Amino acid sequence: EVQLVESGGGLVQAGGSLRLSCAASGFSFADYAIGWFRQAPGKQREGISYISSSDGGPYYVDSVKGRFTVSSDNAKNTVYLQMNSLKPDDTAVYYCAAGKKVQLVFSRYEYEYWGQGTQVTVSS
Image (cartoon, rainbow, N blue to C red; front, side):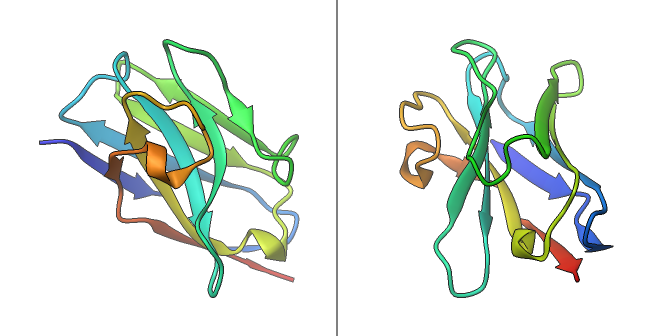
């Protein structure tokens, strides 16, 4: 059974940092790409980062480029999202997702499996 579990969210002041983790089980990172998405209240879920061991990356959406860094620890089957210089606009539920044949890396429809999400709240 494929399972993704996010952790590491919380409340942080603007300018602060958080590191999110996405622990995967039931599949190998060699076979799947991992995307990070977020969804703010009243907004659509947006892709923000992508990493794959087989076809490149990482990639970032412009709004987080230079502030967020995605990495993976294949031995732990875990992907991390280091978020620095956080802004109130980063407040959202953050999700990781796994996809086997991802072409549009920031499209939610390319990913088959999703975690439950973790809340990130950035106060001003």
